Length: 455
Image (tube, rainbow, N blue to C red):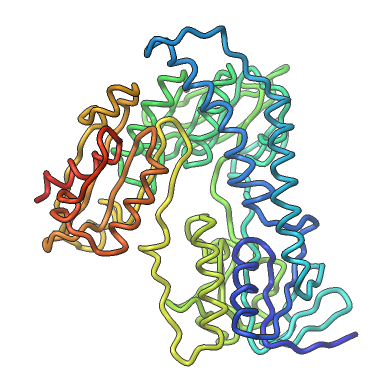
């Protein structure tokens, strides 16, 4: 068996792994990339955020056109051409993937599944790679929820949805997180009857309840039936449809649908690595257990980055973690991950959601005393003239006046998030934000107006 030695071995060639390799190369380290994926590019490009946003762009544009009458524009009936939407999505994915593939192939690239055989050695097929340090960035996979009979009925994941060229008559979506909410609106605008099951008191359980409530209202306006505190227990075939039964506080709820869409959690993909052989603590539910510097708590040679950390699945934070892990691997003074800065997140529904910094729930859990102000979108002129009156902005301020969190549910929330991130990142106070010039009329005035309430 051929053996080679490297300074750094990165296992996984998605966003986190590629970022780790880039950081190692910039530091002039001898790095090798190992990937068992058949397609190069990573989840974001191939099956995640990029293809999802490509197809959501169509239904969101359709939603804007449907509102055209409200501002004095008459249109002919709008038709969504799903095969054309999917063709466009595939072309975009091919473009992005080809570009990333060329970048990855500039590195020593080993194709095949990696398996640890000791704390400093992996085996990939007939090759042994001994490395001073490892960055594990193998991503995550969708794991079917424990629903009796699920394997006997038609079910799909979000990746499967993005290959559909015909809209089903009805779907039942299991999971009310970001993926479930986005695809619920997508299907509803295609004309599909949608029921969404969420096993929590509100959708988007990781965010504040007011954010989830606003999104649920938007889904329900689009015709989505949202069933809260619902645990789907069994699925059975019934002729040409599936019968799904969920337990709710008010009793059993039965829904018939053509397809079950699984939008539940993704679990770290680490089982094939044989972590025990390397003395690395972790499993498919927790991921790689690391310290603040992303180093394995049980094997100082190994670091984790991206979805294997079991945190939010975010591309920008995965890239950040990959760079940090590779840098820390050879640093005498490793830096702690600054998750509060890097886990801002967004949801591409209408209205959009952007959550920057800490949530109100996180502040309460940490014992951080904050004052909170909320301002509805309708309070600024741009929302009225553009007919974008749905949603709100919420701001969280410490006792010293520094802003630590901003949540937005608005038609322009995602683009407005850039300003919110910059303000929090640079430690702006509510008074400073209130006194900053903001163009009029713009949705950004909401930031100044809500800050005024906290001065």
